[in-house]
Every structure is written in structure tokens, then in C-alpha cells.
Image (tube, rainbow, N blue to C red; front, side, top):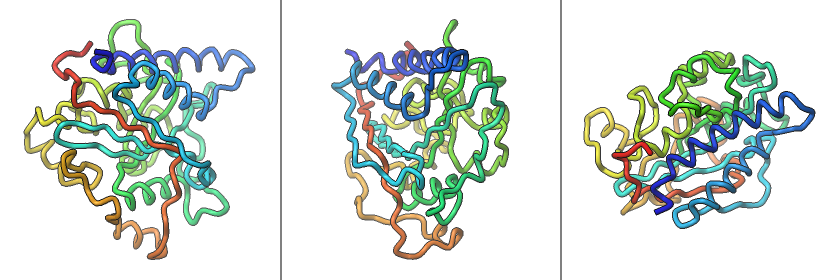
Length: 266
């Protein structure tokens, strides 16, 4: 029955990230993106190993892709496939510095463009996960959260963030949601992500059904050919060579959501 508490786990770990960052800000202890990511993945797996599979690969060209992780949320009808890059808000920071300008020497374009390109070429949804403490938020604190919880992990679609064109956190919040929205009953109609209820075939509206045609949503019963290629438009937009190969991810996280009770918020 542990899988039924996955929503609670994401709430608790988001809260823990926020509180740990606040402690780190007040000390000389580093609490970086890689440490946070590895810690929360370890906790998710330890609590829900029956429905979680985590694979790690050889160290990727981190400077090019920011050590992205691939996430698969598996529903009874659809599987959502994402490429996630983590960013941590610095102490007393009100903006994600160099969000649009950071660029590795060996990369042809800024990191945000490479995230968009690599995800699109692999049929994945490009996503940012922002780690922050409670004191940094303005809009986020008004999201649907149980009392006494802090939302320390904010997720947003990279293309929405780039279109908004602001590196300031209060602006990024407008197009992002607390990460437990990925695995809990959809708590806001404004969430840019398909809900677990949709992945499990429990919602059939024109708004959500249109998402089924996106390459990052595949049929769980008949998954797409892994050799299929996507993103011809982004190759042209970024002037990438036709034989360009996306930078590898550091690992893959698969979560089987088919048994989740999406009628209960926990």
C-alpha cells in the first residue's frame, strides 16, 4: 500500500528541501543541486521501491546538459516522459542568475536552449525543477498545500519559462507549480502538467485529450518506437547539424502510477 502515499512523500520531501535550504543559508554548509537531487531520489526509492525504478548511467557531459535526469510517470493509459534539469536559488537570491545566458564552452547554444533541444529530439518534455526556501516565494506560498507544509521544489516547463523571459523568481512562479502536483490529484487547473488522473484514463476532456498528441505522452500499452526522432523544427531553429546527438542524461526515474488513488489527496 506504500504506493498510495506517493503524494504524501512528495509533499514531505518538498517541505524538507525548503527547510534544509534555510538551514544551509544560515551556515557554511553547501547544499547544492546534485546533493538535493540525490537525497530526495534516495528517499523516494526507499519509501516506494515497489513502484520506483532508478537507473544511473555514466557521468554525462555535465557542462552541456546540467546533469539532467529523465523521468517517466507511467499511467494505465499514458506515460509522461520528461527531461528535468535542477536549479537552486542562491541565498537571498531573487533571481536564477544566468538562467538564459549560461553556456558551456563546448555547447553550441545556452544551457536552456540545449535543454529544449535535447528533450525535444528525444521526445521528452523539457522541465526545470527549482529548489528554494519558503522565504524566497511570493505566489508559490498560495498554492494548494496542506497546513504547515513548505513547497521546496517548483517545476515548470522550460519553454514556458523561456517565453516568459524573466530570470526573477516571482515571475518563474507564475508558470510553475509545486512538484507534488505531478503525482497528486491535480490541485490547480492552471497546472501545465497532465495529471495522474489523466495518465490513468480517468479524465476525458478536450483540453487534456489534446495533450495525448504530444510526443512526450505515449501509450503505456503500446509505447513509441525508442528509435523515433523528434524535433526537426528545433534543429532548424538552433541550426543544429542533422546528425547532432543529444547529451546523455545522468539517470532515469520510472514511477508506476497505475495503482495510485487519484480521488484522495492524502
